[in-house]
Image (tube, rainbow, N blue to C red; front, side, top):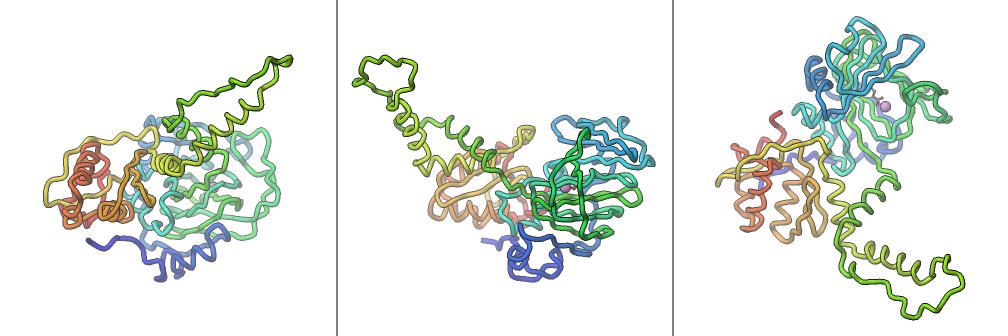
Length: 390
Ligand code: SIN
Ligand code: CO
């Protein structure tokens, strides 16, 4: 099996200013900001200004146009036609486009550099374009975020949030009190990592400013449990047909009262669902790999013999000890098949020699995924996993 293009966790990385991914995770992840001058020297924007504008005009792509004329803020949600954008020379506006990694291969390639962090935490690459002095105002995000400057210049100011009150009468979440503690004037290639909750304000200096935000979502308990319980509710659980029985219910003078036994039955029913670890695992894996509702895969063909395979850049694939998950579906996997599938999920590719070791049912499954457009044949045997088509 070919070596995974995974990142060495103990080797100093230019991307992290000479820290190894392990040191970064210990010292900075979720703890403290890190600014790296020239983390990616010679970085190029993952798409042109015109391509970004075209993306923001498309339905199914989340985008926002934020403008500030010096006093008032305005916000418009996409799709935004090119002609609806302010002139490039007009100062104080910015266009923000979410999930650009799903549409531009180069933005996805950028994400691959951060695969020393579990993919389950990854959200997307947002790309912003700003005219001179454009920005979204001082705010906090509930994300771990890597802000990579890819064109033009921007002044970042950051500070701890002591007061989270928001400005009133503004269509954006802008902090009323922002006390910057550090600032940098950043150039293309510079990178700023911020843990959730750090206030930040980035203002374009000169026009043609492009910034990529690689965002790692920290799900809230409420959001997570809502999604998981929704999935669990849809599952046909064993014993779910069992009926509540109250053969001993005496005649009552308080018919409005909820019977204690019915309450116990309700709680026990929920507990039984949660006690089934396998069902909970599957719900979690399916939720984590569910594609965005606007993503459609292009159907493909079965993998020809002698070929390797790569994951489509829109596919989400993960695994746990008993299952493999891809694009919201779960499969049981064990033994060698499981090891090979884990490799595909980690390395995003599997070469022809590895593919040949799959059992017949696993090989057939891979063909079905190829037909669904989730994976595709790699002519060079799966060795060029990072190069993807648009
Ligand atoms: C921007 O790119 O203008 C904003 C990114 C952020 O603050 O999260
Ligand atoms: Co932010």
